[in-house]
Image 1: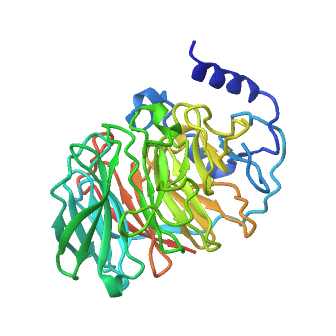
Image 2: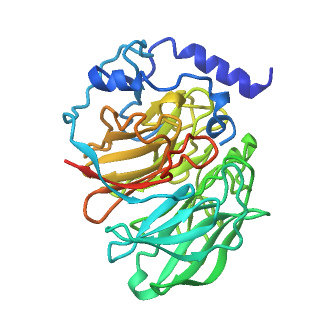
Length: 407
């Protein structure tokens, strides 16, 4: 038995006993009943899983469990959370899409949407008008790769710049382009050499309050890349808009911001400028992590709340059948996590001190696989399905983008 498997086996045995300051929260009532309807097949049946430590003032990991499951620890939850909110789909903004992956808002309230397999970028208005504005010719789609994340420059009204993450035949790349309101132009790569694979390509982009671009990458199924500081795979990167490493990065001359990731597909900053990331686990735990410069998030040595020295534990963990989280957004005091295999939208309350409350599921099984979620300027969420990605059961009008109200 190799060393990695030995460490994981020891960790699984240890979770039978209480873990340091860990809080396991059971979903009760209607939430628990709905969660219980989730698929319970092994993760090897879902390529999004098998193929798709310490921290300051540690608040403990929130573990979402089903009513009939025994939490890993009996320590009670001490985080006050609000009662259920009225979260509902109010409009269907777009239909007939092919795996919408990224949604990024323009200053006027319209959004740019990427479609993974076609490589197209479209403009979508709040009234539901969809117009194609360009195609990324370099796109070489795979089972999990293609045209993925998109971000609009925080200075868009001055520079007109848009950024995308794309899988090519040779690597994953970050591209910069101009958008004049009608068509994209002047497409150029600014960061190349990100490892590429048929699985685990990462792909989320997000501008931080510091003005720098954060980029999530996957380890392409090659676990060792996540711990290799000479590889851009299995990392969160922080770069300037010309692709160079941002000043203040923890590893001199490197774009790497954090390491030890399996496949991060969600990045979101909250109203306190904290960066949160959603991450696919393997066969035990999916995660939401608080991202801090230079930290190691454990993969492949640690998965979930491992309590291993030198690795950062997640703030929330789910069984993969209840999540398989793709993107994450922050809105109205909560993180909103779109889940593929779990076919639901998770609401995770965020406290002022950075602790997280009890996760609440919405839309369980109603719309199939959910991949893209973004906070809109009007306070709503825009939520995209992913039923045309080869792993879902598409309805006649899939894939769709919905507007979701929060009250």
